[in-house]
Length: 449
Image (cartoon, helix red, strand yellow):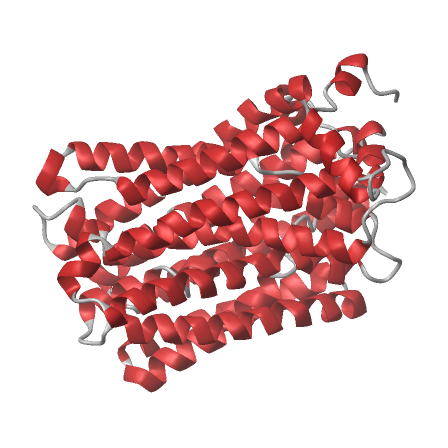
């Protein structure tokens, strides 16, 4: 289908500048970025998103209960923080809808620029936010608004780059290319945890709660600026523009997409549920348990999580190799079964001291990497080409909302009332949903063939 005049006119100055850089100074096709450079750009973009995500998540445990909710006990304050944490996942589909309109009217560069500055601006605004002692309950209102801003921005930063990698993957390498964007999660966690660990280790408690915790939020804005230019350089490549023009990466109407692809979107959202539930149960939730129910120093557990993140990177890489050998659905299914087994014993290790916490974290990151590495777009091939771009974004939004948005809050509520075994039951439910969605998808595929 031909590109409309509006789309052509939306080739903004940012896109033209990026194209000139790509071609070494001449605005000509045929001098696109190498696949390796695209992969690096994708990793930088995803790392910036997850860094923002984990900076807020860690502060939800270490800072906000004292800064924003000092009038309640620590457990209740942390639950309030996790409730605000979930707002971004609720707002994310709204961001997808709003920025989809912006994309169609003004182009990809405008969409990315506005979304990334909103993401960075909302994040840095948290760093400047006064606490309850200064403005009372308005502190919670501001924190909630900034969190909604992050969520809307996350809906807007969807750029189709994972699809670009997947569609351009050589035969037999789809699994390897699919895992590349997922590397941003453990890398973002490692950087965020290392920053908080540094300030916790070098500052007094008073200085950390007064000003030290704010610096990771300031760093987030700088990282977002770097990510913006890295991603603009990619979306202006001839390869990306060609697929956009052929409707393989063109935004479609949200209403039309849901009406025609709703069933597949639901299946796609539930297929990675085991990995998305696991995502928060080895990153955000265990830190809250350590802080609230043990005598261990949080900086020590942050170091354990940094080690776990390194295992997560290796495991995500391994998922790409395995997926190309045995199939992505097989990797997702087997990893869901392994997570179900893990759920039966692992949560209790959080009461096992240094050794138990280390085993829980490292084993959890290994299983998370195998599942999360292939969780992106495993059912996307069933979307029609004309709606794949928007349908994939909606699937990702819904998967994060259902599988991860309320996971820290649910896990903390369950464990504080019924013990750590209940967290295992919660994780088991995610595995069951993944296996059920994969089975239904297989059956639907048979009927369509």
